[in-house]
Length: 160
Image (cartoon, rainbow, N blue to C red; front, side, top):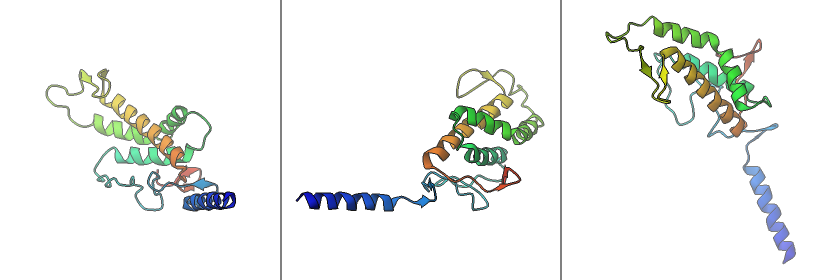
């Protein structure tokens, strides 16, 4: 009876280990991880964003850098700050493009209130908050799924 219990336990353990999708030293959870092998690394289960979306280049840059830097032992918030810094050029282009757009007659950005915090804000601050929030999400996502980073070219994630 004891021998059958041990055999059953070992069979269960083997079954559990075989269910893991082991990629070398990284376990990949395909339901969480972005797929960087395709032209677009759209989130699993999320429809691809239209190319006309001005936030897309920032989001793509942030995702790729977050996955690349997620292996750092630093706190996720510190890594997210580094990710936003790495994507500073894309964030600046997005903010500059919005500043070039005409404001409505009431001056839409004057006296704007954040829908998230209720604090006074402006478009540039909201874009920065967006980038930081997404960076934090992607760092935690990459760590939780033990996701593989995107390919790198000359020390920079490909596609940024």
